Amino acid sequence: MLNEFKTFISKGNVMDMAVGIIIGAAFTAIVSSLVADLVNPFIALFTGGIDFSGWFYALDGETYASLAAATDAGAPVFAFGNFIMAVINFLIIAFVVFMLVKTVNRIKDAAEGEKEAVAEEPAGPTELDILKEIRDALAKQG
Image (tube, rainbow, N blue to C red; front, side, top):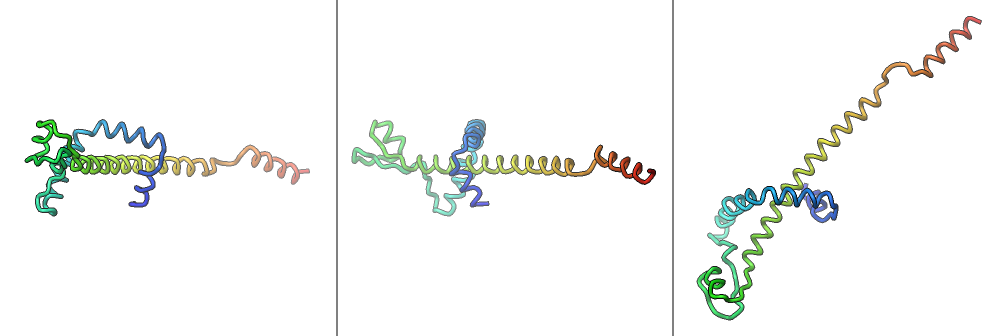
């Protein structure tokens, strides 16, 4: 499944991208809550309470208590913690879309398999079979 996910995420298929954009836009609030309320605390549990969103480097060389304090002071900041959170959000959205597309493809494949099975079942004798029977019956009579 991990290899399928890697293939999916690296494929430049327009339909996959469109689905990702639509699902990503529709579930932005859900994913943001998932990351902020579930993923971050879980990561913080294993990293000793580290919050990525607070990680930054002030490019003016000054020291600030928080990212908010640095931006309020007008300092240029390299907010790499926000970038880490954006990457986590992206991976979660991409995985959800991957699972959605995989499920849709599985349903579509199952439906196509049923159509093929129905199409392959003989519905009875064909016109050619009936004509052959008539020919054989006439040959026996005469």
